[in-house]
Length: 244
Length: 241
Image (cartoon, rainbow over all chains, first blue to last red; front, side):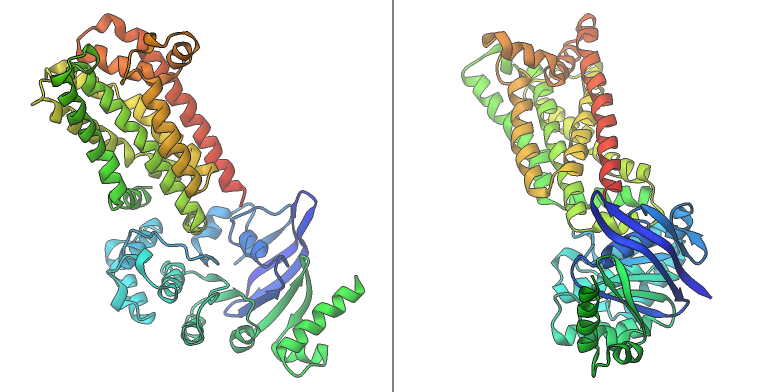
């Protein structure tokens, strides 16, 4: 079943085309990585798919629901972990989690069960009663993802989830993302190519708002005749630049 | 909406600046000026005039509280996260506004209660004076929402924390009689709602009901105007992502 489909999806800001007629299909249960240089259109695409902004033209469908016409229903099945840590700083981790459950109108019993489950799954029990704003960067990133997960999203957007983390914290989060993968379709944006290689089922490369390559890591390496993903990425980007 | 409003209440009450400026500072001013009045008596600082004035001045800090909360939520991407949930624009606006209204009333109530031992006459007029702060409280909270929607947390500190509190203080006639300066200054001050809000609370405290109509319209009209404008600006920043 198709989880996400974009049809000629475009976003323009005055003279700048941030996303240019994107056609893309992502299957249910897939972990799809979006790669690209700064300003390639990754965050714009995430914002459009998560109903944070409206397309200039075209449309996208999340589990068959239009992001332009059925926003309210789309928002019920989404979880978003933004690039910046997005927490209520003076609330404890538990209160942050409960807030999201309340917003999604969970019963008290379900809220308690979900908070316990997420805390267990993400190993948050040690910091559950600490103020979110006082946690270290690594913990805040974890809580950021926990907040995106708590409402049982069918589609999960992770926008640069490991940005600024040290190597061990990054590997911990990768393990976590692999665990989450069983329950949700995940769209991941990242600048770390080894992250995409390690986690993604398929990878899409964006440049100047256009999808210039799409496939598994192996397919991209073959397409670029490269030994590893980094070389393939650079080669595909340069190839596109030469064509322009 | 209630979940978001509860969260805003917790965020505000857990900020030590709220406790100091929201409750402590107006009480300190009240005590200082009452002491001054005892030593150098002046009609302006007579407790039945001073207490309503301090109540209205104290509300100017609510612009800072609202603006700081909104600006920080925007900067930290917390609002961005919540925009991807089923919460509506009305939920956000009410969620920011509603928790601050009872806090504003509580601040004024405490200020009036603290004025009782200092000689404030208490009666049904005091209750009316307390109720009369509602429009100016809404005005200040909406000003906060407006500034928080357009400015960052640092700018908000300057605009709401310094400029707006000073404007409220100078242009409301709490600290000096506006006619002493007169001219354009007095005209500007009487054209703005702060002076009328203070006079409204004072006239009600004195039971001078025939003067109420003179000062009622400006705070109510301004509250509606700024609330409308703040909703417009908040919705605009929501769509600008």
